[in-house]
Image (cartoon, rainbow, N blue to C red; front, side):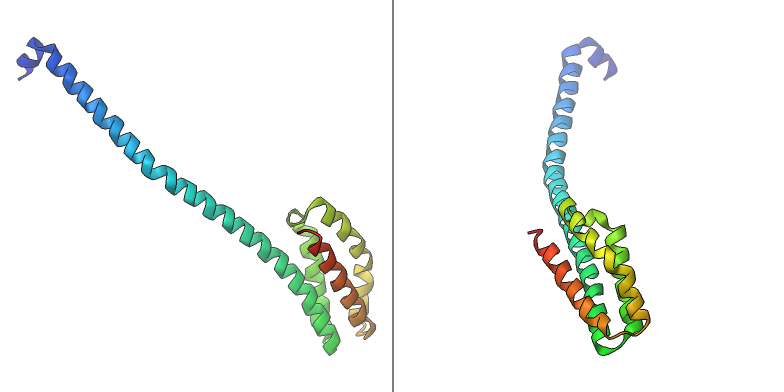
Length: 145
């Protein structure tokens, strides 16, 4: 058979051409399957990132709401802990906020130490101050949309 291919070079060249065509067709079929799955995966990754972003914002707002409710009920230590988490989240997760929101959130930090001190002293005035803080935070976040 080797002698036959050596005597007839067109036979070997047509076999190589046929294998190259098969390889090309297989590559095209592979890419036709890969591209839609890649696009679907990219969309899912983007949706996951957006969901994680919304979850982080919801957790931050939930910490502040918990502080308000606990302070109203007279549970000042859990309120103080939730308020500390709220301010820590705002500080560490600043990428979750737009530049305008970050600028609007800075004045809220001015009352941080005073509020934590009121809660540590079990002062009932902290509940009203926390309610005002919650309303301010919610207005800042609603301005995002």
